[in-house]
Image (cartoon, rainbow, N blue to C red; front, side, top):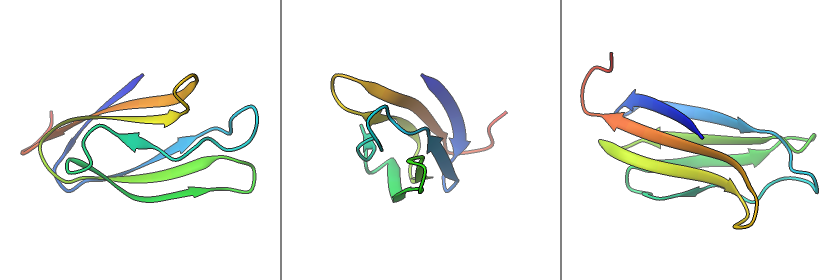
Length: 84
C-alpha cells in the first residue's frame, strides 16, 4: 500500500501496471465525497491512468483490482491546510 498526503483541491494521477490477464477493473474509493475519481482510462499497453481530486479533508482508500487480487492500494490523506 502506498500513502500520500495532500491538500484539499489537489489532483493526483496514479498509474497502475497492466494485470496478468489484461487491464484491471476501474478503481474503487472508500469515500467518493473525499477522493473524487475524475477520470479513468487504459493505455494501449494495459496501463491504467486514474485521476483523483482531493475534495475534502479526511482519509480515503483507493483500490484497483478484483476482490481476490488487488493490483494497487493508495491511502489518500487530505489536509485542510499546508502539508509539511
